[in-house]
Each structure stands twice: as structure tokens, then as C-alpha cells.
Amino acid sequence: MIKVFIIDDHEMIIQGIKSLLEDDTEIHWTGSAKTPADLWRHLKSNKPDILLMDINLPETNGIELCSKLSELYPDIRVIGLSSSDQPSIIKKMMKNGAKAYLLKDASKHELITAIKKVMKGEAYVNYTVSEILKHNKPERSLPVLTRREKEVLELIADGLTNTEIAEKLFLNVTTIDSHRKNMITKFDVKNTAALIKLAVSEKLI
Image 1 (cartoon, rainbow, N blue to C red):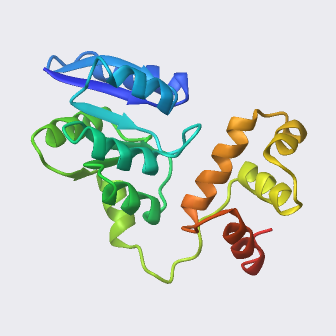
Image 2: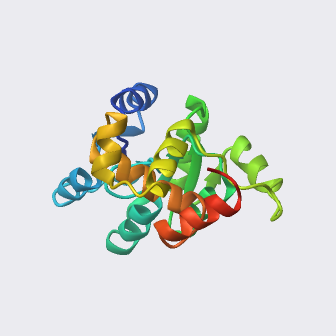
């Protein structure tokens, strides 16, 4: 029996993935976490075989979490499960220890195939991800900012703190910090200052 766990901060996604897996007799759903802190608490007493991991998480991003998890729990096989189709994100996730990568619109068959292949020690990306990587070229344009990311980035550039931005956008501070960290990862820069410099030079804001 393959023990599967998921970390994702959206309950709808968690329940949707659970429903796709619950009929497979070879897979045992062991639970979910919405934050890295929840995950670390769970792993103290229960270790899954497969961990489905979102990229955009509160407190830290999936790429950093995957790297740390691979170091501390090398026997747990991570499958990146995200809405991000950015080649740089996919490559970083795989480089940091993920054994497979799926977009969240993957089919039930693709998800179950990924779990079973990874359990056998094989790497896996579905057709959509494979095509993204195949056609990725160094000269491709920069990642696209979502509307919310652009709002947050513009306010950071204006000198507002996370707390001030959260109040202005009616969001919590953790969400703002998560957006900031995710943009740093997405644009492959070292810190917020470098992110702002890039955004200004590329006329993203």
C-alpha cells in the first residue's frame, strides 16, 4: 500500500486530490497539511511514501521546502503539484529533490501514474510539463505576474511594509510574505531589492 500525503493551502484542492485517489486499492490517503509547520508536526510521528507538494505555500515556498525535506527525510518521495507552468520553477523543483511534477489540471490517470512510477524509483512528468520543458528556450520572456502579484510588487516598490500592504489589500501578512517569496523564486533573484530592480528595468511595474 502506497501511503500518500499532501501539503496545499487550499482545502478544495486537498479534497479534490483525495477524491481522485480514494478508489485506488494500492493507495492509502494518510492526510494533509496546509502549512510547512503542520507538515513538520505530522512527520514526527507519521511518514508517507509519497508527498504531493504545492509550490505556493505560506511561510516558505515549495522549492525551499522540497530541498529541506529531501535532506531530512530522503526516503519520502516528493511530487510537485502546482498551477505554475514556468520552466524555471519546474526545473528548480526537480533539482531540489522532487521526483515528479504535475500541473493541477492533470488527469486522475496522470496523478496515479506519477505516484506509482515514483514509488518504483522512476521520475515522471506528464505530457503537458514535458512539452513545456521541451520547448523552453533561454531567450523566452520573463515569467508573467498575476494581477495580485503585480499589486503587491508595486506596493513593495513604493516602500510599504508587509503589514501595510496587507492592510491596504485586505489580506493577512503571511499571504503578502508568501507572494513576495514566490516572486523572488519565480524571477530567480536573491532578494526583494533585486526583484524590484529587475521589475523596474523590465518595466513590469
